[in-house]
Length: 467
Image (cartoon, rainbow, N blue to C red; front, side):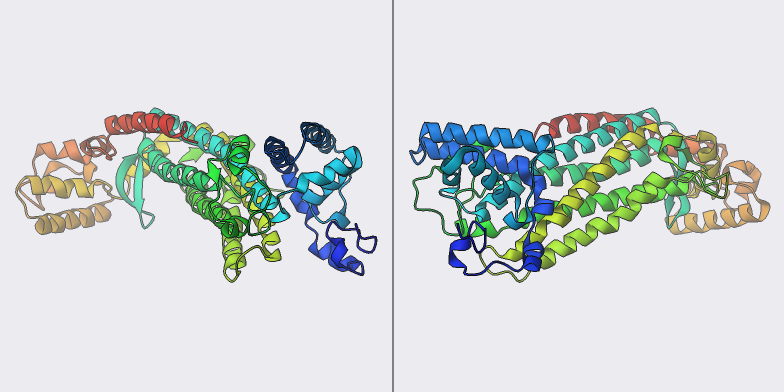
């Protein structure tokens, strides 16, 4: 090793790297997070090298013992990370050589930091995806159970944030759940493409050593080795795909957050969030602020930024590996942390939502939310839809003038707009009658909500076994 550079690659260089450049190009301050995966990959690599005869069994055992001890040092916080050694890989390899001598230098046979880091990131992402999926499952389970319990709770449904038609709270929650179902499927689909092994691609062209990549893949739990060495070391599609999933998920959580913020306001007063998910004001003692959904809503833009950053990072890179790719880790790590924490917060919070049923019911009663039911009633009586639409419009105008909801008008009042209307109209003008009438798959009738919750429960149980 060159005394001038004190680097693993120093033989080519005649002067040391500038101190600022060393700090500028080093990644150890953030990629040390990959230490566990780096050691995992190195143990598999050493095991494979021994199996094909490149290392002796004694060398393999010394390497594995040394790496295991290093893992313990890292977990105890006793490992000395060095910026001059650049990254997590060289820090661990240098420490291994300190511990077991020249045998430690043999570990890098048949691989490069290019395929090593690509393998580490995929191992890391696979682990994190499994943690994120567990939180997503927990959120979906809690949401489904709450929806089932609130299948009969009536609330207004909105379009343009204006009262449209009555729905049930359970039906609304299952709409959220459908968003999360698609997110769950996208996450598992992403995991399939993460679970491909770059190790063995070496720097870009493969290696002349008689390695067995299928052995390494099996030891690391990868589905298969990557097919092309150039693509294996330079591909970051899986990172972009994950942040794409993360951005869509965060968009969904942000939409939910917006509704939670509205619903907790005094103007809506639809729900109560437990105090542990809220904070107060330093000056206004009456305030109870929904900080958790507000923060989730705010963090959405952060994840969007990481997606755009990774797309921009990769857009002009030629094959194969480039130093640019060092910039993939910080946005990816932050996207992972943000998504995991937001899902955990929601999984804790959503099952604890307390609906204020009276407020919801009263809000649904206002705004002529059963106007469409009156129009449908008239059509079933033989009135053309356009004529029925006009009749209902006149009825609503009368209600605004008299401050009466359609269900509060007398039969005589309604008949002044159409003689077709009879006593049975009140079966559809009540909120209960309105929601019960939507008695088909996907509808808001309480029986349909309970059936949908049951189907969602079964589908979730099937999906979460696919990782």
